[in-house]
Amino acid sequence: MDFTDLGLVVPVLIAVFAVILLFSSVKVVPQGHQYTVEQFGRYTRTLSPGLSIIMPFMDRVGRRLNMMETVLDIPQQEVITKDNAQVSCDAVVFTQIIDPVPAAYEVRNLELAIQNLAMTNIRTVVGSMDLDQVLSNRDDINARLLKVIDAATQPWGVKVTRIEIKDLQPPGDIIQAMARQMKAEREKRAQVLEAEGSKQSAILKAEGQKQSQILEAEGRREAAFRDAEARERAAQAEAAATASVSDAISKGDVNALNYFLGLKYVEAFGKLASSNQQRTVIVPADFAGLVGAIEGVKSLTDSVGRGGPRGEPPEGASSPFVTRP
Image 1 (cartoon, rainbow, N blue to C red):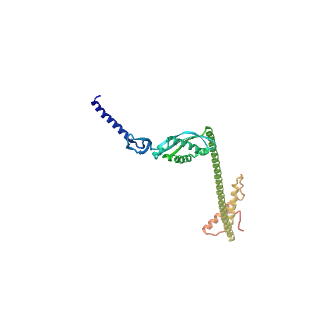
Image 2 (cartoon, helix red, strand yellow):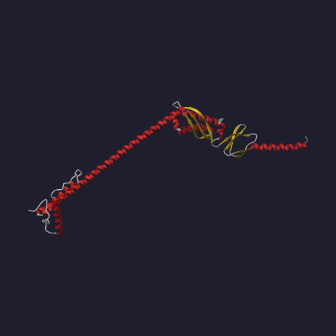
Image 3 (cartoon, rainbow, N blue to C red):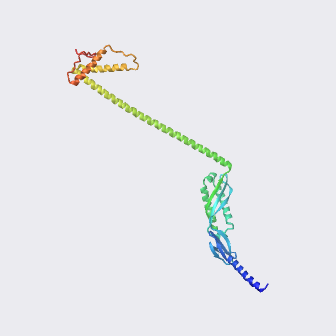
């Protein structure tokens, strides 16, 4: 190899070395991540998102940490409850690194540590509760797990934002027993509601009958009051008519007495003719006298209307009741 070729190789080597030096000293950190820098194996600083320069050959990137919130699946496991029932449960944990230094150097495998911590605490919390409480108090279980796991991960620079129980699966025989219990409970509620409905219906029916009887009694009372008032007025009218006839008789008016007796005669004969059990009507022998009495009443009313003398019956009319001597 001559000196001319050696003069060409040296610049090429220098250029290659410069490129390697440039790539080893310049670091680009993506958004949502942070890198730790170690110098001869000791932590020195943390690189934030963006372009950063480190000392080549002396500094190196130690841990590449994701600072975004991440979801960690907790595998399904069998848990024994307080009342010795076996339940299969799994969960999800939402975590976020707050301090990259403890997360990188305080725990060896961060995700595995959080996973094992969550599984042990799930067994502790679920094992301290009865089966019914486990199935009905998921929010309580989540709150207790969040409190315990978040406190345990604080030294690691990790914030547990949420933990949720995904599935709680009792054994098949317990599920069938729960189904029968639920069916019996619903049938019981249906019977109770039906009994309540019958009770309310009977109460409403009794109230309706009570109101009906009250209204009927009030109606009878009002009808009796009206009947009594009508009888009282009829009696007053009868008394007034009797008094008028008595005054007319005392004054010597025979037609007034004939009118009164004829009226009673006609009423009695009408009742006799309108009876349901009366098939044959017997006409009195002195029916012609009844006609004469009616003519006398007519002449009486005519004479009263004309203002003429009273007491004389019309010619040719004979009365079957009272005659002047």
